Length: 460
Ligand SMILES: Cc1cc2nc3c(=O)[nH]c(=O)nc-3n(C[C@H](O)[C@H](O)[C@H](O)COP(=O)(O)OP(=O)(O)OC[C@H]3O[C@@H](n4cnc5c(N)ncnc54)[C@H](O)[C@@H]3O)c2cc1C
Image: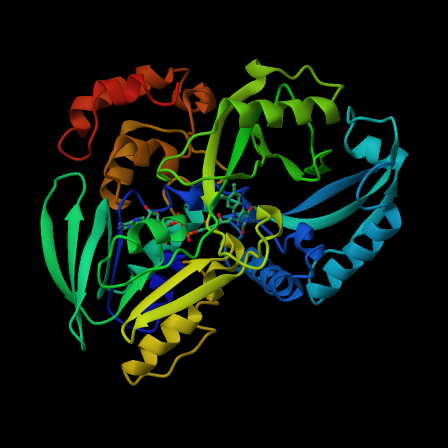
């Protein structure tokens, strides 16, 4: 979300510094279900405003950044004991299309026979038929990076990764902020006019430590985990939306070489950086996958990798994590200190507009909430969804041009390899992950943080 506000300010020619304690997009924003969507599930909570806004944003990004997201057909199978019978599904999907202002490709209700043609091997007993609707699949990490790089076209804007916010002192017309480079340990005091905290799930942890804020917790953080399943083990063509027996939704979304399966919903209180899935979450996802796809030989060996993120849910009327609203909230503890948390990835462009407006207008400029409806002007060297053949020349170019500071930044977010099992040998003349990267370690030292162990132990 911070990246969205950063771009908005940059396009309004407002000088701005973005800092992140870790790599950009390395936390929640690379751990989503990778959908730009209205959220079919929120129909149940009557969150029509959020769904309408999110569907509008989804359809906008399909036009603005077609290289980072694509429209996708989703299949919703309905069984005898499904929470939504077919008539309700028909009504819900019609409402979903209506809320998109009919910009969505229209829904369809299909028979059992047709559904089994779309998804051969799905559990057939008690299947009644299903619904078809359209949302979008995105590369979450790459969208954030491209949004930041677009903002950097304005030379008065800067972005620093691995630089953490430590503390601040409000001095009335400005704030004195202590920041620290987490890789070098170097600390600095900087003077800033307006201060914005867009910390996602880390909001309460950081702001609770600020002595001058008297911050009361606002979040109900909820961990969600995903599996990447080998496409050879589950060669389905269309995403499937499963309504599980414990009344949850699991998305099964085939992509280029792997199938994304998620998610779980577990409350968390402990450290939230770099969270990993628990054994229980992995078993839960695999168990449900096996129930609904009995026609495929799925077991632990089908898992390529797994990842987790923490939903920054803002407390509402319900303690039920599934029912907690996905909309964002803003706070202004000082006239020039702003906090924003909650929301969905899909609506990142519009969520911070209230804060951007205040800041831009304070500079006596007019605010235009349509400025961000423009295309992103700097594509990453390795495009989303279409991996390029790699060679050392390209690696050095990425390191130089794309704010890479660690080996993980390079491999996970700039190249897009989530574990060694995702490595595509064909793109590097048959070389294994280690054989490709080990010879580069010495040459990259001094440019990024890298050791032989980083290569050997990379999410094996
Ligand atoms: C499992 C799961 C699935 C989801 N699926 C979807 C989906 O399919 N579609 C959708 O629209 N939304 C989805 N979401 C929601 C969406 O991912 C989040 O709402 C969004 O990514 C939150 O972004 P953020 O910028 O608020 O948080 P983050 O991406 O976590 O960014 C906060 C940043 O603050 C930084 N930070 C923390 N402390 C400091 C400090 N002291 N100094 C400097 N920086 C600091 C962190 O390093 C981090 O990078 C999902 C979320 C989860 C968890």
